[in-house]
Image (tube, rainbow, N blue to C red):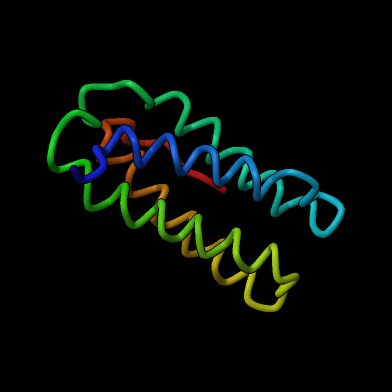
Length: 107
């Protein structure tokens, strides 16, 4: 059975928490950005949007971007980390806006 939007969001939150853990020692601004994504995802978690089919494409994209970012962290590939974080912020922003939190801007 394919994952629901909520399951993908939960996985994204878990992945982002792993990314943020200790990231401040590399770059405090990066850690702040990832923590902010976790906070916003926590706020929208459990909302009706994640029980619907339209939640799946944007949430899957954010989950994949988070997985890619975690891989870069684990490899210590900091050159590619910044651009991938920018990509994750954009996909997370898309999820947040589609979930109905228009006007919330990630930094």
